[in-house]
Image (cartoon, rainbow, N blue to C red; front, side):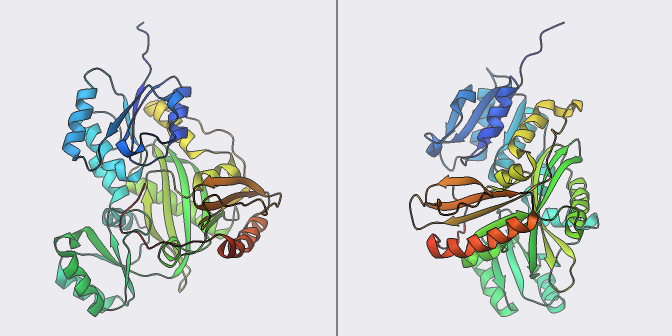
Length: 401
């Protein structure tokens, strides 16, 4: 029998992330190639796990990236292409289709990048979404605004988190904004603003089945933090609660609708203040940012980056098995800080599990066997963080590395 060759992974990211994914691939004997931005040449990559690294100049057209990777593939057989960040998903899908490499293609990719596509797909599956309208036909928009009470939010279809979202209070406010957008307006959707509490479900998916899910709740909705400033917090909801059970079920339906075969997902939902119902907001086929992975690992023992790598290595042979998990509770608190290297040593409760070390950021991961203890500490710490550390910056219209 011919000897099986190790798999070769091409990892693509224009942001500094995914180090544990690359390390796990290497632990499984894979060859690991990294394709990243030239500006990240000196970033903290796991160089001991990389067989080669390739750097791309900024703003390189997609066609040129395809040519560069195709040239690379002449001398290296590539078995897997993985986008480690949401903004690299189109590049990875294009390369997979061009080189006929297994994995998510362009159509499925859009369900995890395009807010309009994911809403339409979810709605067809019976997943509740806020009333929305594509920003295409102006008569449709007028009809929508006459029949769906405001306020509304104007959302870019292909940005992440709260980037570029604008709250709209009247038709008179909307039309000048659309005029300013010009030919770009069809890249937006208009959606009813639903006040309420925002939750997220972070999942591991193997062969279309949700093998693992963890339900958490944001202290303040991310859009409020992004646009109004403040301290970011998130924490595990009480396991077995009505919210936990409902969101796990909705999340299973959502993943099936969107068609993610294997990988990880970060889905967000809002519980409407007026009716108590859960509404789907967005879903990404990636690990959540803002140290959500570290929070999930503290509560469950599951490192989402690591499990994603193990699933990709296993492929479609069905050999992936979720490791044993814990059912504890964790939380994360994170703030932009005035200080270059903020000192969090005064936060010394035994529940402090990890201190986040990031330039001009203050952050902690908390861990406990008691959900209310984590939530109570986060509320107390958020007040103190606002007084001791918090800095603000203008809302971004575009993502930054």
